[in-house]
Amino acid sequence: MARYTGPVCRLCRRHGEKLFLKGERCFTPKCSFDRRPNPPGPRPARRRKVSDRGLQLREKQRARVAYGVLEKQFRRYYHEAIRRPGVSGENLVRLLENRLDNVVYRLGLADSRNQARQIIRHGIVAVNGRKLDIPSAQVSEGDQVSFTPRGLRSEYFKIVQDSIKSKHQPSWLALDIANMTGRVVAPPSVQQGESHLFNENVIIEYYSR
Image (cartoon, rainbow, N blue to C red):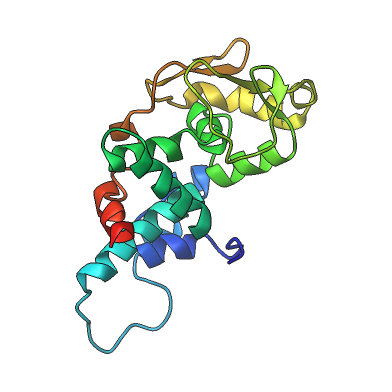
């Protein structure tokens, strides 16, 4: 399955949750979900009861859309989560939070994960001083995220410098605004992830059946 390239606001409406896929627009009155929270398409004549399997699928799809991960890759994260010691659901969230595109977004260097993927693909993001253009790359505790020399000369860098002061970073990340660099200082906190959007334990149950 190819990556979805249609209107992302329809995804929020389809999943019945604001997934913050368009950055700052999601916090303004222009947000499509606030204006039309009902699912896209014609309304059904009658409501149908959703099965337990359907509810599990809904949770999984919501997590996939929120992090911008395709099904094959998401299943790999599940297998890695159950292989690691500890609670599988928490392992899954940490794997998703440790993605480079998510870290760039969490640091405030991008307004959304889609934008973070774009600037990473353009080669203006570096990890530990080396250019890394793979959005799904896993970062570890102690890794430093910054801009490449080309990124420092870009117009995008000037825009981020002006807007980043108003953004909040989670406690497992540290941002040096003066040098525009971020560092992973601790393992991602599950509570500070997107766990308010989905139940990670239900997703584990979905795949384990």
